[in-house]
Image (cartoon, rainbow, N blue to C red; front, side, top):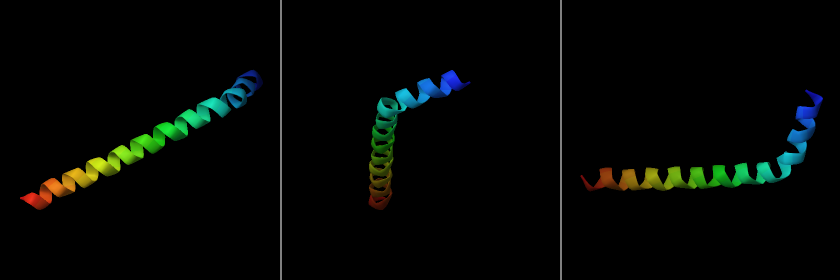
Length: 44
């Protein structure tokens, strides 16, 4: 278990940045999708 946590903390630097970037992209994508759907509903 300790070995796993040791590897986790070493990888956390690169992996953490990657995860943050992934979540930002996902969040922005969802916001844009929501705005697009809202505009589609406004047209009707």
